[in-house]
Length: 384
Image (cartoon, rainbow, N blue to C red; front, side):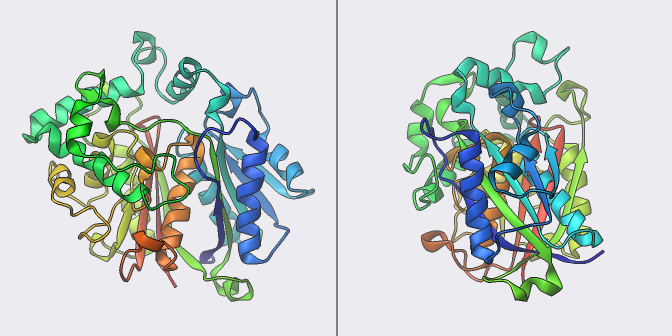
């Protein structure tokens, strides 16, 4: 297999766009990635979306975006894996380039939940969770996160304020990200005073769905010098499935999918956790982000909350995490959110992260979850 590199990235701002369609967002992000590399054509297109078939009733999305980009005759694949859809689209692009079948592959993630009512968007988001038992009860993703929030605090003897520090950290970073949906800084006190949405989880501890698209262009590493910009190596990429029904897991506070995907990705990249400069994790709720850090091996069990509270996850800390705001503050555009993570790590490794730049960033790890816990995608990027 050939080594692969990212030579172009692009994304839209995350928000609610009443004047733009799903197609408009995907095209905007795609042309940014293509322009950055100085190319207009690719050999293959991989498009990830979590919600489009439920919100826009749009299937065959890959072919739609190919037509919108005038990429006639290219290999096209549509990918659906809940919020991990965009990351898996990238993994497929890397696999195609690595195999030698294609030289240029574009991965795009896009979702536009604002086309649905809040109730319908929440129902669509629950499509990634087991339906006959869990969804049937009427619980939603935030309700499941609230259950884990209470269990995490009880088992590891941490305070609500320590857990909430994860959300505060994300908003701190988003304040300097022009693409973020929520650029306001918040305090732990504000989190604790915000409304309860699923006891004990509060409003400022969870992410909100937003419209957005991100795109990543991949080529063989040995050919990356032919294109404009600074290439970033995709050093290791892996996904794994885990427990589909939360209550049947051996340990509800450890997601098997993340652990297994991380082991494979680290091995393929030839790194250990000591090599990691920064991380982007799936923080649809603060406690999910904390569990994700621990499952990645970047924090000991039960210690991630303390790391957040002590400032270790800030840009200047020992493990900069969600350096552009994460799902919580950058926003969560469904299947695109996992590609935003890749774009943001590329900015860091190329020294283009502005006020949020991590000093001497060499290796970044992105982790995304599908169905809240049942599928994980882990990607290791390295500065060339």
